[in-house]
Image 1 (cartoon, helix red, strand yellow):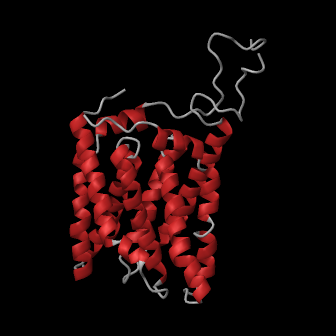
Image 2 (cartoon, each protein chain N blue to C red):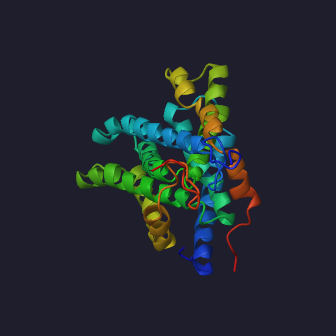
Image 3 (tube, helix red, strand yellow):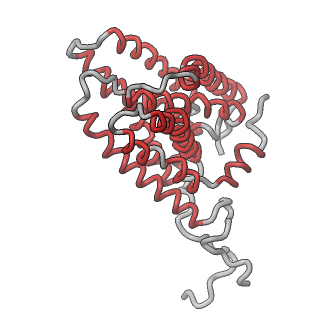
Length: 146
Length: 143
């Protein structure tokens, strides 16, 4: 079992706090008070972002158990930068709105420093998968199995 | 001996039954496939007007769902994520728009595709496990 230092846990908690506050202040007011006529995807985007903020609150208490939330943050931001922002930047069609999104999303790079990678590696890669079959008691071989 | 024999319905050392683990894995697998099919067109030929945020977020969930096939319990936060965002959408967007008649032409499609999510994930999530590990269990250490 890889130990994660208290300092690292605090850094992770700070990250969760930034996520919860940032989304709590910007997205949640929109979710709570909005008109009923909205573009189709706006509601979806707000609900997705709002959920990140809510679950980040759980991360304050259980930073390690909520690691999938940080990994999710990192992966969607990486996908967005690579699949959407980069091509437009390359062909020069990156507009003002997207430019500011690139700035905000690039901030996600701090996740590389926040995430305890050795722990992630040990927990999600090295450790055997959760059971696929019923585990049998080691001391009591099944009768007639041979 | 039969009393102590492991059973697929019985809660084992992992604190959920094997049946539950398989239900969670099936959800993860179907989710990964469904999300991948959902977002591929938008990734290959991006909408020139849209910003692609939603596609990227669904892509992130797809990646997480792949990990969840191997570690369903450790990825419970992603099941909670699916349950919560679909509940928020249903209560704050889907239902109000449906009641007010102001939804997009594809609202009924979304009411099924997204709006059924809370029911589905509500059944798949091992709530007892969530309660024991995320509410009752002491948090990670503070010092």
